[in-house]
Image (cartoon, rainbow, N blue to C red; front, side, top):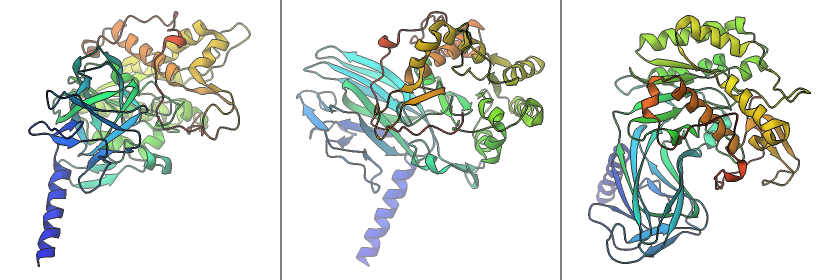
Length: 440
């Protein structure tokens, strides 16, 4: 009988924890701030308690004494990942970073390498507080009562992703990441920017692949706005419907939120034309968004790295960009013309320098990569970052309603003068793969 009671107690506690949405973690040594959960260098993720580090090898607890919360920290000489089992939703995460007896340098990404904080340096003895806002999702489609009514049909490779796994995962990276505490609280008021699209939008998990969608959170003010990417490699408008990705969004989105729509690369590849359902579906999505009080934003597909003899970009997307421009005009919908902006950007780089923005790497640059990578469709982190700047530039230049949420991380950007690739800061994650994403 006693064993049954113990089992029921464990199950009850596990259920309560799974439903919990507020967490206060004190990273460091044995001294713990009141009301905080202690996290040390051996706190490996445990399904029973629902939190911990993905890998504890290389982690180091440092205690400098003094304040229990800020006087100690966790650090490592390689990227480390902290996960928490948490219900889907939007969360504010408050981080204390730094070292009371030294300096620190930390880059923070979440889920599938979604960029939140970049190269945060602290002076000797300085502890700084930073806040990020993160969207956490699962693949279950629920009604207003929370009852399951469907499911997103994930591809096999998606089941390995860190953003469909019913957990929040935070990546701490850089030369000297030092984390004192992590506080997680629900955010019920942030406007959500839902991203739909293909491999050029998706939160790519593996180096060296990247997209503009996973760089976008860096340029928005936390607490007020959160980026929710539902894009996936290889998707067309039709496939996005067939796999119920858009149904998941319709069941999550609320009046005042935004729906970014970028499709074209794979619709073209599938042998479709703009007249074989593409226009019809776009118009249907726009109409439904407006009916729900949602703000649709169309994004034309960026160009591929294909130049003519005069070093000008060749249009390889047929009439898909033009079709989207026409539909935006007809429906009086905001348009981010990433197709035009990317043409300017790539031509400013030129054929050779543009390779630095795409996945062009010699053999053996990444694990199990026996041959050279020469992909003129998919971007590396630098190229994705530059394209994200193009998206933000369009928002600012057109004075769209989202402009007021753009953070100070965005400085005036001129695609005619791309950032120098040498100045781009991106410490690589531990997840690497040479296999090309779906789509082309």
